[in-house]
Image (cartoon, rainbow, N blue to C red; front, side, top):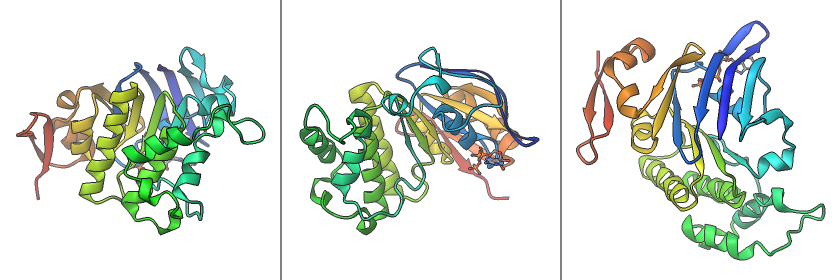
Length: 257
Ligand SMILES: Nc1ncnc2c1ncn2[C@@H]1O[C@H](COP(=O)(O)OP(=O)(O)OP(=O)(O)O)[C@@H](O)[C@H]1O
């Protein structure tokens, strides 16, 4: 689905990402983890085609991502940012309708009425009762669900998430991740998410790409990447890694100094 070959991104002389090669297969859920400033958001911007690499190549389905037109790319890739949606008076339903932009003609119309499809998304995300409420009046958790609804309406094959749970409490963090997981199960969508919460990354991602000082420090399963040694060398923290009692996945316990 995505192939990155020797990609570097520099801002003036400053490296944001250096010589990264990486392959993502269709249907996988990857987590991008690493300390502040290690290049995670830069990588997402290169993957979404928003930024061009200084050198190297980013390919989507075998084609240089920079050669896709805007609407064409929007039918393949959706991006959900940390804040989800900007401040807006548009209602939840109107925001979901905006997600249909890649399928609309110049008059803003689609061949088939998207109404029933949008209703089904709102049902899945528990948004139906909120559909006429302006986004500005939603709570953080509801707002992030509306943002997810918009990208679901877009029907992409690749979802890019940039720290989507940062402003959510633990209930809504889990709810959000579970909703992405169900969507993925249903449609087979590929997911790449930047996550600071290593425990969530471990529970939801098949594989992790670890960035350190703007380079890859390795990739593999959560068990391979979330080791006490990696966390000490790269994040500079002492941890105990323990298997989750419910599913055996590695969980990171911080050790107070
Ligand atoms: N538009 C830009 N102009 C100049 N430097 C930039 C720009 N974007 C990112 N950088 C620099 O590139 C490096 C990587 O930044 P990036 O935001 O990708 O890291 P990150 O891992 O996402 O960090 P964080 O976890 O803090 O969000 C940083 O040193 C940052 O200052």
